[in-house]
Length: 190
Image (cartoon, rainbow, N blue to C red):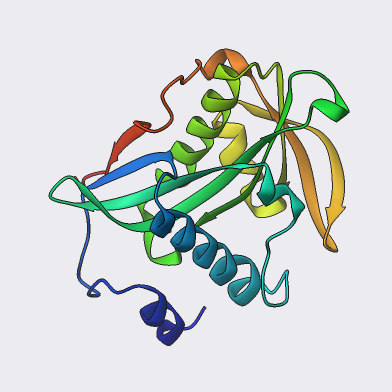
């Protein structure tokens, strides 16, 4: 993604570095709108996987989770997102996570993707999940493995190789309050 594209998407000045993030279920319209805009920026513009928009039928039933940068403890901008959904038709207790995206300017934080993954699985776990799956792009497999996931197969999604991955649910205690979610802090440079 070009610097101009990032600047158009991100209203924050270049030197801004929030120290606190809230990761929770999207509750406000602006949170959902910014999450969908971020997905378009990552999956349509940056990666070129979709033309125009990445939304599909899953969005109608999925729960949208967001990571938001905070100013003075208040959410200011969506900088990451993922969606989760029940796939009971494929088996009771089966949940899927998809469309994990973190704004390029915030990927260096190193914890936002992991915190979104943690909330996704923990939230599904609280809603009766007994098996969780995700199609993970090959470049992200190592991150998931560090978070106690394992590959259970391979698949091509939109012409790109993905690992079908499953977490060890024992490492993801149920999160019954996804609206409060988690607070994540920027790691210090020390």
